[in-house]
Image 1 (tube, rainbow, N blue to C red):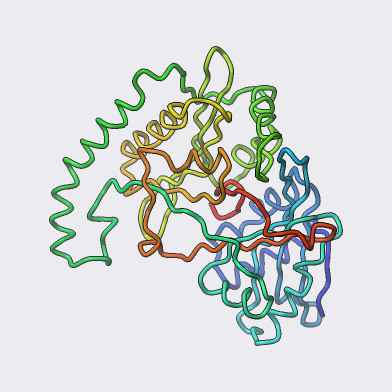
Image 2: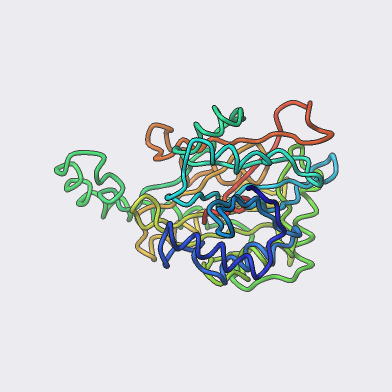
Length: 353
């Protein structure tokens, strides 16, 4: 039996047990406090789920997280399917389609979007008839060349890269220092006021493509209120006005210590030097943290996505990406017959990091 429910504290305890069965106690989705933050505190509103039961036992779930998008066309509500899981003891060819049968049925949403991993992407494409609208762009810069190339090239090349990595990091350090010179913005770590963040967000109300809401409520919830992850946020001010910010954290990325950039939000029309200064500051921090690389994902053509593709970061060839990183998205309800959704995404719009 499949049932759609609004998530509350009682159901979170049951969902936590399902996560522990699959992932163990250390995974983020196995933490009840993390799930309460992600599901119950979401500023987008009530998070709900489709549940498969075996008797009274929950054996499968897909959670639907609401997300507001804005553009010059106004605003709309989207839904992001997350935390899809079926108990390994009950997996069958019939259970996945049964669990996901409601993925397009959301009365209050006009858009569904998500980015499944390589294993599940074929299931969405073949069984549920989703067609990718594009793929994420992977941008970054390697810092410890031997670590980045481990298991990708012969060991002797890694040894050589380990030696060359020292002057390479020195070069990177010098470049980011130059990028931060002459930029008439001050970078601070103190969290700005809600008014400052909302003022910056207001510039995206005229975005030519749909972008996720970056209001102060979302900013506070996404980057400050969570019990699990610690983020580093840096804010750029010019003439006492917030003109941009960058959020990152250290995380494991395919076995490497990575400085992962979730968002680089810069006021449209600002000089590219603002985003470059924020990116350079992030790379310098990554060097101090002894990260193996800096990495980020972006999709679409918004000012937010474009800011993540600027120097000193480089576009990483798709053949070097560990995941396909397909973007699946469809309009729903009254927008159902429109063309592919013209949306733009960063890691801040997903729940992975």
